[in-house]
Length: 106
Image (tube, rainbow, N blue to C red; front, top):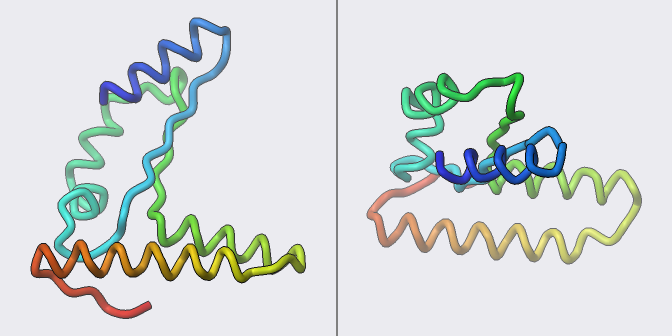
């Protein structure tokens, strides 16, 4: 919440409309992902004033998929995006292994 408040303050100080995004790792048993799917997210967005701040949330996995689609549509080289996506997937797998959770392969 403090980051959203800081965002609103910094933007309004410059006469801008603030926009705040949360990028998180999606996966079963990961606390923040669970919060994003559950009541915690609803509680967070309930206190935001949409006329004051724009807010969005997206998983790293979805963000990389969108970027890959855009790069592909523009006929650009996907190699770097694919390597980044694989690196992120390995990091997520490692974190989930440490937590003792498993995720379905995508």
